[in-house]
Structure formats: structure tokens, C-alpha cells
Image (tube, rainbow, N blue to C red; front, side, top):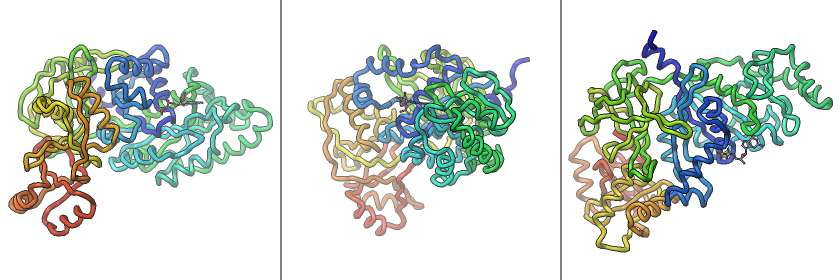
Length: 522
Ligand code: GDP
């Protein structure tokens, strides 16, 4: 019998991995893909990264600084579950990209380095997940190294994140003596990911025999404590974002990864309902809807293509269908939607809620766009952050101003930078959240458009989107501050302030004007 829409949706899991750089996200990603049969050999994710890097000049930045700039998506299947893993850039200068990606997931795996505990970037990303009630599965990695006391790690999760952690497994030893995990609720062990099934055991004392003699007594006592000392796992509390199941392991040594996959399939949420301006769209709604959360250029340098990554929210996205782009009301043919696996793309004939597909296009699609099969609706929530660095772009060859304008527009549509056009006709201003984004812009303008540029300090350092209850109030504010007003890519007005002091001054003088630092795409 063919699969129903409800069945197809129910077996999908869309998630991201959040962590501080170096905690082991890349290693864990490789191992997850290995399980899904998406790659043959671990190491391929990095190898692939290298290949892409050698292809394109601007990626030099990534190579030189050893950071991952590119967000991508990886689809894999394990047993009966279809997983869509959305990768996020590790460096905080690309935080806006990461936050947008998190709007497209239903769950996250939080990777913690067992020796370091909760690090700043983990905390920040966790807060974003909390704002969106994204359930979190905790993975304490690198147990094969010297680690902190297990209870201490769990306590830290409780204290720093105000979450109820429930250990589902318990590490058998740590550092040199780490051999695997004890499953507290099943009274069973798994010594490595290659073991498909858990092995039942009669209590912690038996497990302790896997450890050197002098560690046994202590370990058995601690395991008993762990069994009794935490509340029972509640899937409901987890899905609401109050509780996190905690797993231990070593991604490098293939320990604990299988447990994570099982946890995601078993407790992880199926695709959630998504809020649009006119209604909430259930994942099992038969009408197709999707939104764009990321644009990536240069996936294939031979064809100057742009891929819009869309998350399907409902219905079936079918290859060849005509979709309606809500921003413009125009139809667009989805002739070549693609799934991404670790090392290849494949045409996607049908995608369901939770799936992430790439749609090649030449600039028709922008971040935040909604696609439907006819209905006029716009998904809410893909955020746009007020840039923290504002610069004017200085062109070495003034004859190329028009080309620069086009290039900046394209970069802005991709989300590389934000572009603001001053009302008074002065040169465009670019805004970024992190300084590395400027480096990327510079490299790309040079490599892809042949436009060597430099950046000049702008007179402004703060930018806020402005609006008012009454249109007349906004018009008045705009005309009396013309030198400090610019329009963003959508034509929405922003107020540019020299510093925090002048921002406060102006907002106190004009209480009827709302000034906001985060705009949701609409
Ligand atoms: P990312 O920056 O979070 O993507 O971290 P990586 O996956 O690149 O890992 C950072 C470093 O930690 C690399 O040298 C990995 O080999 C190492 N690493 C990752 N997981 C483990 C683990 O479970 N045990 C040990 N000993 N090292 C690990």
C-alpha cells in the first residue's frame, strides 16, 4: 500500500547540532551519516569540505581560519526514519545564518565536550532553541578523554540551562578506561556503535566488571545513584523543551552515536505545525507550503547557480509542480528540487513536511520567502538581525558603480550582508553581524564579480527598523531625519544612529516610532 501523507510526515526528523567549536560536531555529523549509509567512510564530510574549498577563491577565508562558513543540509535514512540534518556555521560571526537555520529544525542535539561542559557558544545557541521551544537531546562527547565528574556535568546542564536533565545512559569508565554506555532504564549495555542491539545485564555490578578492578566499586555505587537520583524521562516535558535526555559517548570512537539516532527516532518530534500570517499550517495539511531559510551560491562553480534551501512545511513538494511565491504573487516552476546527501545531490521527486530541498534559481528566491501551491500565506519567524557593523563600500574603479550595485543586491539577497540604501542618495551601506562576513563579501566581490573594494567607516554604528501605528507619524519622522534614514532590501525603512546615545535620544523624542533590532522576514 502506498504511504499516506500522515505516515510520510510521521517518520521524518529534522534537526541541527549545536555546540561550541571543537566539541565534536563535525565528527558526530560524520558518524551520523555513516549510519544512514550516506557515506561509506567517516572522514568524508571533511574531505568534501576540502574539495569545495579548493574550488572557490572566497572559501580561502574558511581554510585560512579553519572555520566552517557554509551551511548545508544532509538527508539520510536509518531504519524507517528519514533524517534531515541541517549544518550550521561554527563561527559566531555567522550567527545570523545559524539562527535562521534553527527556524527550520524541529529538534537539536547539543554536543558538550565532557572536559569543558557548557561553553559560551553552546549557551547562546541553546537560548535560541529555547526561544523557539526546540527540544534538545544532550550528547556528552569525548568520554574517551579525561572528563569531568559525570554528576557535575549533568548538574551544569541543569544550572546553566535551567533544564531538567535525565541521564538515559551512563558512561562505563572515562578516559582510558571508557568502554561504552550503560542504559539506565533498560538495564543493558552497548559497548560500541557497531552493536546493533543492547545487551541486557543484571545490574550495575555486572557492568562494573568491564572496568579495571580499582574503579569497580565506585562506579557501581555511582550508577545506582544515577538510577535513583533523577526524575523519570517524560517525552511530553522533552517536547515542550523543559527536559533533556542525556547520552554519553565518544563520536571519535563510535560510542553513543547509535543511541542518539534511536533517541531522535523514538522521542524526537515529527515536523511541527508552522505559523503563517493567516493561519497555522499543520504538517499533514495536504496543501504544499514551504519557506526559504538559506540561499547558497557557488554550489557548483561551473554553473553560477544559487540554491535556495527550503523547508517543506506541509503537503507534497513535487518535482515539476508550479508553486506560488507569496512575496511577488508570481508562479515558479520547481523543475529541479534536490535532496542533498553527504557527497551527492539527487533530484527530489517528492518531499514532505520536514524535508529540506535545494531549489536552483537565478535570484527569484530570497531568504524568508514562502512558496505554496496557490494559497496566499507567509510564514513568520525567519529573523533578520540588526547589523552590528556598518560600512560604506569603496570601489577602486568608479566606472563600475552599477555593477557593484547589482553585486551588492545579490549578496544581500543571499544573506551574506545586509544592504541599506540611504534616502538622501548617498552611497549604499552594508551591514553585518560579524566582521568575518565583511571578509567574505570582499573576497566574493573580487573573485566572482571582479570588483576590488575596500570598506570605509560609516558615520553610523547602529541600525534599527522603524515603524509607527500611524503612517503619517512614520512619514514625518522619515522626512525630518532624511540623512539618517535608509531602506533595506525589502524597502522597509531603517533609522541609522551614530551611537547608542543618539539612538536613545531620538527614540525618546519620538515615542510614536517603534525601533526594533530584529525584523522577521515577511
Ligand atoms: P567541531 O569543531 O565541533 O566540528 O569539532 P570536530 O568534530 O572537528 O572535533 C574537534 C577535535 O576533537 C578533532 O580533533 C576531533 O578529532 C576531536 N574529537 C571529536 N570527537 C572526539 C571524541 O569523542 N574523542 C576524542 N578524543 N576526540 C574527539
